[in-house]
Length: 181
Image (cartoon, rainbow, N blue to C red; front, top):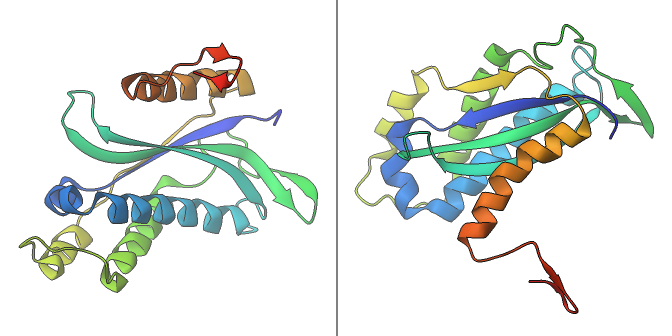
């Protein structure tokens, strides 16, 4: 879409790492669901946008020092669709589309609620109730960056991460008579 895009990062506190290791599929899904629910809740709120923004998400499980650090990068359109029409973002100060303090609180509440309701988690000797209590008192990290700019800038940004991941998995971007190689 020919609009600006915001970069928002949702991080899980490191205290969850032991539980994540034995429950990657379940917890990664909860992370994606909690982050997207948070963004959609804010997007649909007429005080902020009143429309459904476009969201692209990429999972990262490492930090800059290559330590285990679970977080999801989200690219969020600066506007969205409501009733078949494009709605421009109301916050045009160029810093962020939604307030990070509110995103942080909502994300934490949604994620912890998903953990409480889950019947799929393998506890692996981890006291989930204690973990919920400890991390529930912490300030969770949600980082909202200024707009990324043009669609080309967004594609370049995402490409750095997806190309690296796909290269590690043996996938290449070449073509053959059968499609991708």
